[in-house]
Length: 67
Image (cartoon, rainbow, N blue to C red; front, side):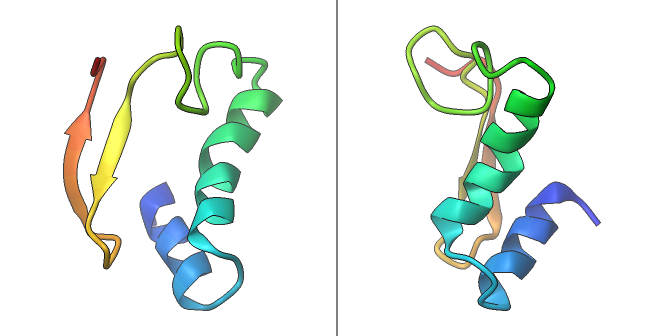
């Protein structure tokens, strides 16, 4: 499965809220890889690669290098 499916599962199964699942899928790996200064959260100066999801957590759009 893909990471997005894992986020969906964590939320649907009630393991954790969406915000925590997204953090676990983005910030935690970025920190582990030593890249949190460039990726893993939305902040000025970081790569703006984002997934836009529907309320049902379906992928609607992928933004690479968005501003």
